[in-house]
Length: 87
Image (tube, rainbow, N blue to C red):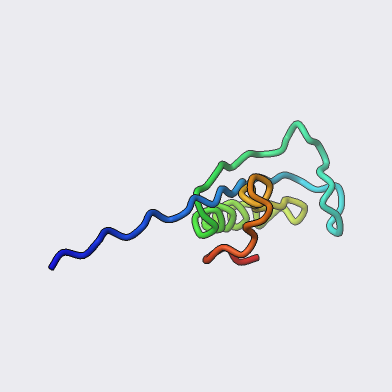
């Protein structure tokens, strides 16, 4: 007997970006023109992989920080607790 195909995974857009901060204890960027846009990703796992690679590559600069923004939460604010979308 044939199995039914698995339903497609819901796309959960994530945005990865970063730059040099003014201060270690803040999230204010030193220069907005220098913010690096790493990319848009279809799920949390791939966004975290990109974030981790950029963070590790900039480990020598203590003021450089990268962030993962959950764009799907802005698009569909009612759907916060999706599977595989940990904080």
